[in-house]
Length: 157
Image (cartoon, rainbow, N blue to C red; front, side, top):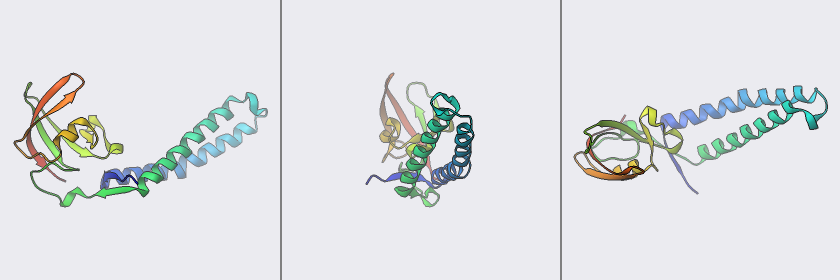
C-alpha cells in the first residue's frame, strides 16, 4: 500500500476538512435533498439532481480523505536539522540565470501550494533537490527549458 507523506500541519488540515465534510456539508446536503424531494416530480427536479450530484462529490471526498489519513506517514519536521534537503525542508534557492532567490518547503501532495511556497515531494523541483546540500547546484527540466539552481540555505521548522 502506498504511504502518503505529509507534515503535521498537512495532516491536521486534512483531518479538519474531513470533520467539516462530515459535520457540516453532509448534513446540509441531506437536508437539501429532503427539501428538493418535497417539491414533487424527481425526474424534472433540477434542485434534487444538483443536490444528489453534490452528495456524490462529498461522499467521494470523504472516502478519499479517510483513505489518505489511514495511509498517512506523518513526518514531524520540528526535530529535524542539517544541511541536507529532505522531506519537510525549507530550501532557499537562487536561479543561476536570473539571480532571483526563492524559498520552497517540500511537503506532501495534498499540502502543495505554490503561492504559499510549498511544493509537492513529487514535483520536478523537489525531486531534483532531495539529498542535495547547501552549496550544491542542480538542474530542473521545466516546460520552458532546463533551469539551474544553487541551494543557499536549508532549514526545518
